[in-house]
Length: 333
Image 1 (cartoon, helix red, strand yellow):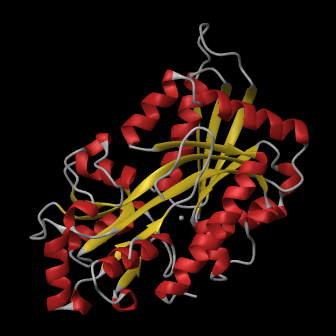
Image 2 (image 1 turned 90 degrees about the vertical axis):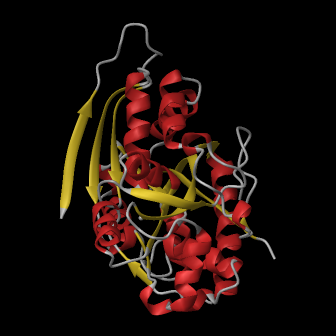
């Protein structure tokens, strides 16, 4: 059976179907740029630096400001509760955060289904789905593992010593992807030893130290690590090789019938005024037509998507059902 999580997304594309720090990036609007739609946007990131949420928010801010659609962008990392801390903060401080967009992704659906936090996407203002990012399994640069076959052989020889790490909580997206891939390879998905980390550096340190045998992560994060010479990408959950890192083999070509793409998008505080929502939707919609966005998208290997308003809600409801069904099948619900 094909373990594929797919949904029709939007008019623009089809997707083949995670202590508080603050940093501000200001980019001057060039005279030739697109007409400015918003003076500023503050991006709230529910996880640590270096993760997929971080990269998506900063990449979007970079494109919007460099294209002149937004005057300045600032970025705030707020880790905790598997993303729940940032969601709770945005809801509890809604009136003072009308200038804030929070990035999120598939975990907002997964973690509400598993009860990791009490809120779900319906408690927020839905702004827009923006990109899709494939998942990848990577190993350290000096690992003796060079393919999914090698990883499976190591797992079969000693399951408890062949742990897979990820930047999400147990039962979260990275765990779900690892379990999905292992099930498609003929293994018991509930037997996989999964170790969670707070994204980015901690998971990478665990991989390089040998604490984990492999890391389940977003493809864009894997590309950055591979380009830096830190990891080998041994499997990607795309149906075909991705141009951003064409040497990375897909699961499919290694005989593992599993594919997955993680959507990422933006949410605002509940009760956001309609004119503010329209402004944010317009800025993101126009961003897709700029060369600045294409540069960001291409270097990260993202899939272009765009769904806002009712389309975004319909998509999220579909994801909620599809992911819930998959999690039940894998024994997580």
